[in-house]
Image (tube, rainbow, N blue to C red):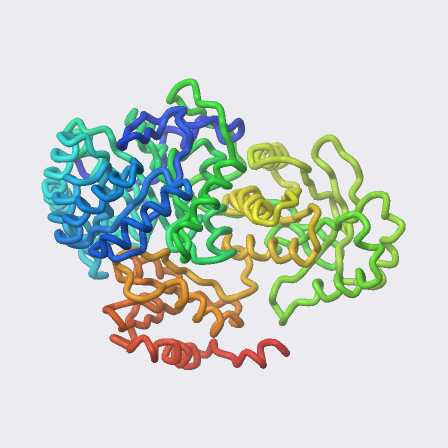
Length: 611
């Protein structure tokens, strides 16, 4: 065993070609009747939220997920007793004529994994807490001490690998950004590099024991971190000649629109790079509702042709795949706004034909161009259909703060000017085409133009799944959405994508886990209740976590946290520090508001609406 690498530079690319997408050639592994990897269809999956000891409830939800189209069902096994219950759960599912493979989800308890491996087709372990633990303790290790700790961890993991190989059971080594061990945190920090090193320690055991039916995941609540971690993992595997398939997901994404947009940014970015063999969209909702979203992401991003071999080309890129940095561009005028350079990424929309004929058109655009309060983003520009160019003077007079561009036909990159030097945009172009444009015009401001489909659900995922990945890579000085939709919806989607990409904040942000059998309160109703109480506080980040498995870690960049600590009890956090312990759930919402007041970020809702 050698000491771990400290440097980030990699010698292999992270995907076959970021500018000409092809699917990464992963080895094919089997879980029951399901195969993933290679040229197999990208599988979608979800996880039950019932108490595993409630066998009837867990069976019913598993069957519902299978009926909804889940290719695999994951069930938590927090104890040996819960792991043993998987035998009866599996028997009842099979008796119903359903062959969907089952995955046991393990945290903290190797003994539960050794029991679960007898009853399922796949076992997921979290290398951050399977042997190590997270107590936020700081300790310096010598290289010799660090290697000794790795060997200790690997020795504890080895019996499960041997049992899984003998039983034909697949393993998912599932790293979570929020539950990296203290040892990894002390050596690598809270970074994608730490996530990858944590997984490789476990993967080395699987390779040494000849068990190659292994899936890897790198989940985080921050899409940027998630994207960078998977890319770095892919490059590290390519350096070693390893080809394990990937399970993609943004963890703690939240509910409703926010959860879908965050998931689309992270998952679609990697699928469009050709990475990913199975996905889960983690929503703080009924798990059945995750399946159609996952299916839509697979449909909207693929399929891609399979790479001919495992050799990846090192393309000239306008972004660093592993470290976020905004693409450098000239700063120029754009109406009364600034575009490019260090200016904020602008929110623009394309007006549908006939909109300016409406009597209320100017008033609606004026309201959209007026920020809810100083410092918040609002509508900053519009694209007007070319056959309505004669209406521009009247529009400019009615909404003087609006940047207005006429939609002139163009077969390639369009040069747009609005009070300054040219900016560039592409119509009907995917992520790879816009990356190529960014690389070919290294200093020109770039407008990310996305034409959206008519279906509202697809429009949301397409906006997030094309503009979001580019923004997460630092590409884009403005986002402009167009399509057969009202400007209010287009602006709302612009601002939602910018918020989820961590570029501009226009409302409260929530980090919320999807729930499982470990959850200590009703996550969906609790999250909705807290949103209703605190959703008027732009710039504030609040985490809602059902238990402590990932809670404190995934709250790394949250300002406040609401975490289940025991049945009926909640711990409240400021940052990663517990400030209120064992608060009765009936009092927890009020106590959270008290914390917001104490820290100077609370305002009464009525006041917020009139600012």
